[in-house]
Amino acid sequence: MLNKTGAAVSAAALCVAGAAQAGAPQLIAIGTIDAHIEDRSSATAASLENAIAGNRLGGLGSGLAYAGGTTFLALPDRGPNANPYNALVDDTVSYIPRFHTMDLRLSPSDPGSALPFTLTPTMLDTTLLSSATPLVYGTGAGLGYQADGVAPLGSGAPALNDVNHRYYFSGRSDNFDPAQPSTSPNNARLDPEGIRVSNNGQFVYVSDEYGPYVYQFNRVTGERLRAFTLPANLAITNLSPQKDVEISGNTVGRVTNKGMEGLAITPSGNLLVGAMQANLEQDKKSSLRIVTIDTRTGATREYAYKLTKGSGISEIVAVNEHQFLVDERDGSGLADTPLLTDTASAAKVKKLFLIDLDGATDISNVAGGDLSNYAVAKTEFLDVVTELTAAGVDPRYIPSKIEGVAFGPDVTIDGVSKHTLYVANDNDFLAEVADPTKAPGDPTRGMVPNPNKVYVFAFTDADLSGYLPQPVREMTGLPGCGLPRGQ
Image (tube, rainbow, N blue to C red; front, side, top):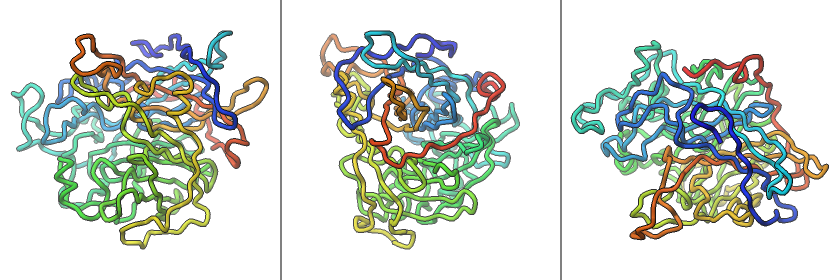
């Protein structure tokens, strides 16, 4: 757990019962990150349009990337927009997208603990994402008022632009050029959902839902270095600050709020693999597209993926150069129904499937429709709900948005070396939600913590044959792995 200064405090693994199934990944640790604290970017602490602090810590598990040693990068999405204040911009705010550099350190648990390891998360730094060239921001004209109901909405440009003389990306849904397709790199709006690190450790790649986009950033400065050109069939042409209006106004392209949710990088560092959360407008429901991008040439290919029971793909991570784990989930679980008047739901589908793109059909020229005949074969690798429930976790307390997945450093258990897989959630910046164990109207029902969780699983080569770790060069030398303090 993190305290309010970001320093590490004790985070002992939960006392749980039950053993991992033979041949299945083994739950070895659970870490908790307090959702009531701020991140390391004090310069963004001023209130946003919805009166929430601009450096609230949250959403850490939207994306998770391994950066060598015990260092990981945690990626929030477009910011704290779960608090209603202005429906004309879907309650989005000028939160600056960022990633957090974190130490996720495992240590042996005390004798008698149910889980063999303790996970201690420590926040090292916060890096804001910006552009060296001008970006398009909304003016706020005609879009109502801020949370106080008195001040007009105003520009979607972050106030920090004028202070640091940079063009920061923003979560505001009206930050776009209506004359350009949604994939225009000049748009300031960014909803980050996937993050990976280059093999040399110097760059990060981020995928997004608004464009969709895949950008390359300088890991130290957070400045965008490259925008990859994605296939035109992913873009929409009728843009709106309101999700429902965008969806109804387009027949081709990504579905609003369901763009490129997942991002993988192969061990060679030469291939990025982005996964769309849902079907494109022109494709049949449950027929999803996976896009590969050559980091050297920018060349792309598309492959088909068929959903099983989940509502969409939330992440993809590379096992080797051609095999990948795909995170398929529904929306049920903790934080799915956050209000006291909501009826709680129990987590059901949070599964990782193994797929192989070797020999798969490139569907770049398939205009749309049912992609089932082209879909890659998949095999279930990990049922997160089953494993956590077997470990004594109430499924109503399993986070609804299991979205960050990354391989980590190897560990030794009972003399056997095993690989690790870190799984994290997006808590939607909601520090507390309605108690899921009590019904609406129950006078004893109150709010309960809704932290970011990190679940660590161990597995062997026999569990996942062909696994090849990405060789990421560690950045060392200064506190925070050689990175500057929060901007």
